[in-house]
Length: 230
Image (tube, rainbow, N blue to C red):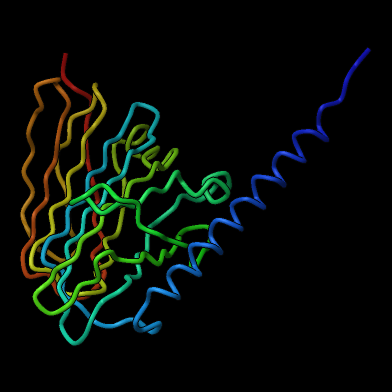
């Protein structure tokens, strides 16, 4: 006898989608209640750190830390665009395992999706505490992109783009390659910042790019690597 469980799987997917929608709506309500200005206000970025920890399948554990300072009023929430990968619809449905915390106390921060396409999500994150006069605020965003760095694994080259929506005093981006690959360069279309290549104690190649006083704009780059020499 053949038993068809397809209806069970469909029901589970529908329940997952329903719970996801409910969670995002609840977080949106929290953001609306906690936001002092729903249109958002301008702010400056004191420190912005990003880590791309890439595995042999091209998946990446992504971490973004951002510390901000108000420039013309309290900042109760921030808009955060993040890229996603074409051809991976499951990434959209599963939210990339997004987790947002206040790194100073480990407390969870409410977030919700306010924009979504096949290539990008835009998050709204409620800050706790808000950035105000004399008080800076920060958040840490963690997620997983499946297959994000497939071109780097298969072609030894990957193209990306950093979008800077607020002036930043300092940006530091770290790429960690899987064993067997070695970074050779990071080429920016607009020459800003400097890149340094190192090797970790575990033998993995690391490329660190640092730039200071970065203006608002989009900064395309090409990341290159090669196979480790035997």
